[in-house]
Amino acid sequence: MSLGCADKIKTDLLGYRTLDEGLTNSNDVIGEQSKFLLKSLQNQLMDSATVQKAQIWLPRAQQIEKLSEDVFDYILGLKSQLKKEAGLKQTAERESFRENDKNAVLRLFRKQARANELYKFLEDYRKNVLMTDPLIDSSFRDSLQVTDHYFESSGARAQDFEKLFFDDIPVVAALAVLSKFQNNIRIIENKAIGFCEAQANK
Image (tube, rainbow, N blue to C red; front, side, top):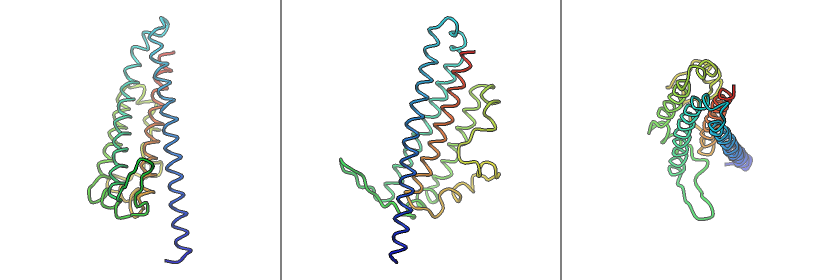
């Protein structure tokens, strides 16, 4: 391998790692915002002006929170599995694994069919969020994005999912993809819980 090629690989890995860290931080911030909105909705149960609507919308917001946590945690589990496939070694101070291992991604997402499983989780999440209330369905049906705009607008199907998102990429890139899906979940959760909170205030 030439020095130029080695430098490019290092740069690519650094870029993916930075992207993953940024998305992870974003997930934490958006998650906290959603908890704040949920707390605001719970407080509306104590106000005689909003209690009746809050009794309707709080359970819907809590259902959305539960749906979101389930999928978020499932993706977190996929990240752990992927790192193990890439030879995870963990100490008290740090973890290490083969960040540039493309075979680990292939084994997990194609051979073990985790890509198909993930696709089903994301699609079920979309359907279940929309089913929480007819108003949520009508307000978010056309804008709720669980993967990315290109994939969802192209008419691509389950069999295209693995090829588009996980084909021939290193572990660190796959981790960034998974963090992006988690980010989508956090954004959906935030918008939907915010919608519930606003409805209770009307």
